[in-house]
Length: 296
Image (cartoon, rainbow, N blue to C red; front, side, top):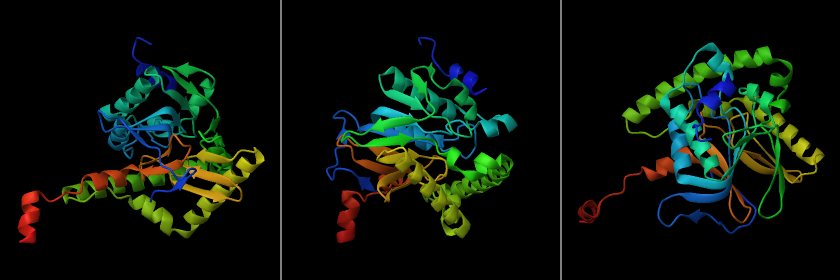
């Protein structure tokens, strides 16, 4: 199903944290407001679900470009699509936007996760210039090597009790539906996006312990593989911090936090919180007349 969906979208012609150099090397196109990075990592988009923030992701892709683009799993949510079909135009636009990047010369890699595990049957193949890989080793501009993996294989619940993961997924979808309704009300009242699910996740002790164990397992794998760090997704918790000699990086998600990991030309890594960027962008600045009137 995932293969058919992917092929159907291919046109016929074929809190910010920094690591690395302290010099930010973000490039801005002189004729547009597109920010150009060396690499971008996104994961857990969950196309095919109502919780997917496809519009925010499209806005992010519109304003940010890169030489390398890594899709780090759970891009399409096959679990939900098997139960009920939901595929609005914005979700198709995301796929088309990514394929257009590949056609224009960007190196695009797709590393499937547990929700789009059907794509693992096509590891080693390319679709529309997008290469499907089980994992990748990325070398930054300053020579550091990072293992790139979705991370579900280090989640004991997903690995050993998939039935429990499915139950948890159902509860999670219900929470996201509440989150969607809440943010509809917030928009009507003039407030910006806020994730109640992310808030509860950080408040729940069991969730914090689960995240900690997951991060430790990924860091152990990085040390075992003798790389400088690891880049993953899966748990919808953007984070970047050193852990006993390796750098743990999680690029977050596009259903709760709307975050991505980027690499600057210098090799410096940064987590971008696009919901926060939009919040700052939409802050209404007082006009000159209003400012003068206020001053008077």
